[in-house]
Length: 101
Length: 482
Image 1 (spheres, rainbow over the protein chains, first blue to last red):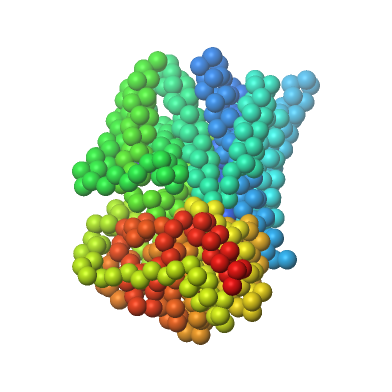
Image 2 (image 1 turned 45 degrees about the vertical axis):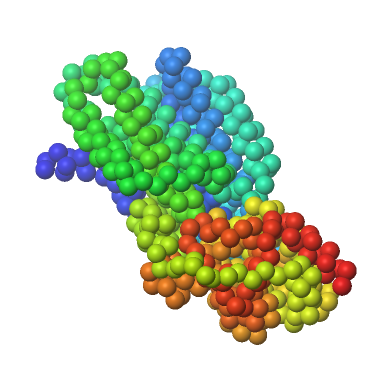
């Protein structure tokens, strides 16, 4: 029990961010029309590409060749997620724009 | 003196970095908010992208670990350039019909990235703990690493399978034994987390983490494999939220606020989006994952002596040309045949003959919600012509002809009148309320949900067999020659 309490105190800021973000995420998209489901999924897909920051940190502090190589791959994969995600979403939404003319 | 200025400079950089993360988080939130309204969606995407760019740039510039700035900057930039080029090139080249697959691949890349980060951080943590003489690896770091690896790995493998299914490279594999394998792998993963956390850290002992990663990948495959291809949008949405959580685990590990907020936002909004998608199909998430389709179905209907009436091209041409109001119901078959441009040609041709033509869009027609809107917009079909399901149903009774092109389950009356059908309760486009129905279809094969469709046998309906593109071409030529 004490372990858990200690754990909470140690990470309390992060835990607060997590809990509040969960509610925010639910609230922010709760009224999305069905037409936008796909672009929204695609857009949020790009946002979780933020994992690339982790890849940059790992690679930026890599100590040996193996972690350099793995880090290099991780950064490429993360960038694919970010750039591909945003570009695909933009292309989808461009279609929506066109028909509003 | 010197040390003091150094300290101030150091904290200054960290502050700038944290401020950039705060701005990035705000942009992510506003971006998501804007993405959920049609008018602002495109700018929302750009806002989120701007937030991401800021977070990446400032991380490279100002991130420090134990006072050390980011090294290997050149290589990082090279990797960023390669990833950006490939990502941009592929996304620009991909056809609109293949968008769902694309989203799935990019999602998988994010998952793999998260898993790789854990794979690299675990040995470091273990070596560090071993040198400190710790007796176990229990703690926030260990939990974040293992969960990140597990969720990221599952998301990667699952997304690749989902991609294969949507692309028609992988079939469905439905066998009761898969469910058992599936659950045992999940149990194995969860038990492994506990076992590894209680393991005594031993420098260089990386085998357990490799095996754990392998198990996560296998579970990702067995998790998606039995789920029907028609449910892939829901699965991708779910895996999307998984990757979000995996990214957040990385954020937890590094105490990185941008990763944490971005990841959790996607994790929670992705879960809600998944549930919304299931609601649109009137099914529960559990039902999708366990995959009731094709198991309970089929029973209610017997094919016996039912006959299908065909319609000739010339009859179809005459019927359409002399109608007052026509509804086109597009489905995935239209997307596969790449017939959206011909479809638009048909509707303008008919309009020139004084026929009122509209499209009835079912929310889950195609492989993804909104798929048909995107597809028809690509063919320049005006926005006003796309009618949502409920409004279309209200207009059905004064419609002369409903032309179903490559759609099946979304017009299946079993959803309304056959309680034993797996799609019972799903809202459908009520094609039978119209005076005539023409179904364009390649063959009598069942739709993606593998449920027989009584619409085809109804007396109001006539079939026009053939590939949608070829048939539409012939039909257009026929109408022109009238």
